[in-house]
Image (cartoon, rainbow, N blue to C red; front, side, top):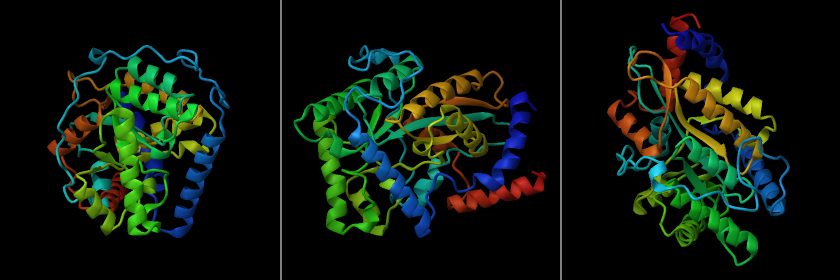
Length: 343
């Protein structure tokens, strides 16, 4: 057993009781209300922020916030792994949650995949630094944008559209996160469809491409919305790693929580918010940690991390799908494994 594997055992032992179910908002009303309140507060804070002014300054190399970073050359990133496999043709939430957990792992397979997704941006104050970090580490991420911030003729909207275009031009994937982040299952059918379609139009105007990836606010969908996603040929993308970064101001706390969840979940689709300076700082530190424990193909049984783009993550999942019908079944299996091994 490698040193990294031994290090993970106590984390799994602690994690079984603590992290099961994190990342998927539970169905209970109290938690859902709290999640909506958190997002509302985040959006209010964003709208109250004046251009060029932020509550925290970055501790990572980057250009001045009033000047864009150098454009990322196409050759700086590997060619996009398109098309990705259709792992959820019915676009059901239950299937999307299990797909988000990534590939199943054989006992002698130490290859752990991580892909990064960022919600609610772009934010002109943080986008230059975030793009610089991604470029420096040759990471292709996925950004789920809010359409409302791309609308209008004011300076702020023009800057935000410009950063959306830069994100897409740099080779990152851009997805639809609705027009203004409302809980879709709490709207009429007509209002919910407007949220999806208006955001798609906003993103297409800004980037030149209509998004095919879709992430519903709070991860909440119903049968009607799943049908709407199928009709629009959207790919439903959820997550399995979520540390509620918008609630935290300490980057070290965010990094520690991310490390623990990744170790317990054995990799995954990470949900972060790129308009939050503590998250930007934490992300830079987390990437360095992952790269210092990189998976080595010459020692495939040794546990290690591989930062990949979303299509590569889905292809690995298609090659070794989880043998469970739902995420709840997977978590029950993890509990049983921990119990059998005394964790």
